[in-house]
Length: 167
Image (cartoon, rainbow, N blue to C red; front, side, top):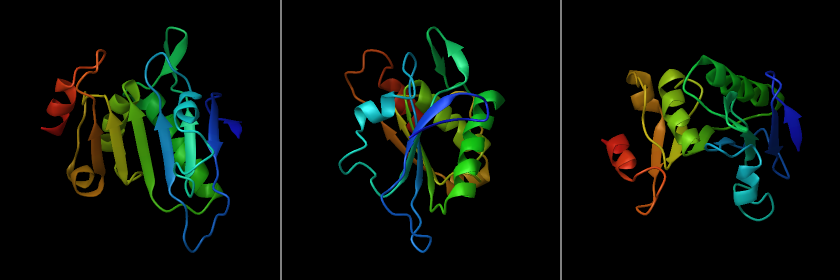
């Protein structure tokens, strides 16, 4: 399905076949990298099949212009949009846990968001990204699960970024 955020940006989302308040689905926001758009998530992880089929999956665009697309940048503008989408889906549906998955620039943003809004999410997956301008307070360090993915042959974002992120 397609909808528009409060900031006027289109996003795609997929609901599970069944939503049960006694066993609520998780909410997964998938954040693309530079030069991509909200279509990226479902192009790479088709809506049919087994990928997170019991969860609500949301694929928004960032708000910060970056060439022909919009990026996720660490700051209030993009942060408020993601916080707003989380609140919108929590208002509309019963939600279990909330996760962010970010690819490249989306991964940089996920790491920042986890430090800024640990009360809103349960975990992140940072895929081929890095940690910049992050302040992970005690709540973030205790509450937010963090997964780091990175290929050693990445020619765009060096794998050293993942190694520094882990440290």
